[in-house]
Image 1 (cartoon, rainbow, N blue to C red):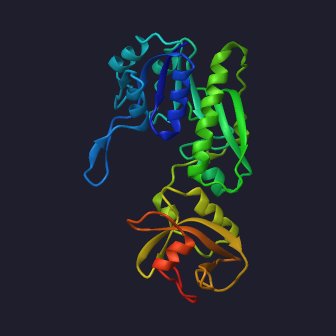
Image 2 (cartoon, rainbow, N blue to C red):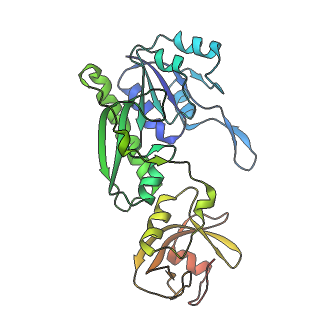
Image 3 (tube, rainbow, N blue to C red):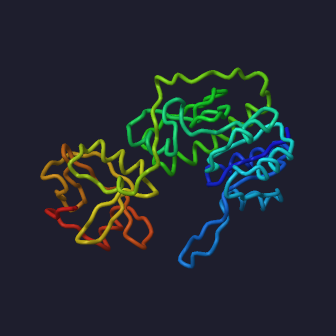
Length: 301
């Protein structure tokens, strides 16, 4: 098929690679413009742009698709279908309607649960037992289009980083499967009554509230790892808690109850497993404590 690919972050790269490997004709890759990154704030291309250029594919990085010129350029590619994976721009109706078979999206949840910007984070933080990817036909609403195919996977104790990598691969394989026999998939409408929304993660959410139950804080840490990272204040230093487990122990919420960094919560306690100091690499608890001992009785903010 003649395809326009639209994506930006690492999540979208496996799908682009799979489409290319499957022999589809990728007419053009659309992605977000390069952004300043690193200490020097030099412009850095998106992961999708880097992959597209490595594959020798043409790349476009419009700031918007709302102009008549941008929409005409898109339509002139005469694609059978557009494949979208975390592109980052709202697609106007003229763009949605331009390809012969419309625009198909790889969405990282089992729709209609977790429509919106942060479905992986929210699924983990809310304690969902499973998630997956949905291949859906895009329409004007936010993740409201009819569904073509769903693939499921258990969440278990995965972090957002780990689950994102898994769902990226599952989504790529699912899209290849759908495109191989597109006519055999019957679009199924979503039940709007079962809808939940996954708003973008606000950095203010990342600060750990020790008054919450231990099991919630474990999910909170897993769901925000590796970015933005749940954090607490230790004697004026911001420490990210990237992984933790629920364990025995009790005390005043936020108090360290032993020398192994077990911390009392609103109910129960958690033990830190993986942490990160500002400007330092992430490390396991034992390595962290060798460089920054935390005595029992310390109160975390």
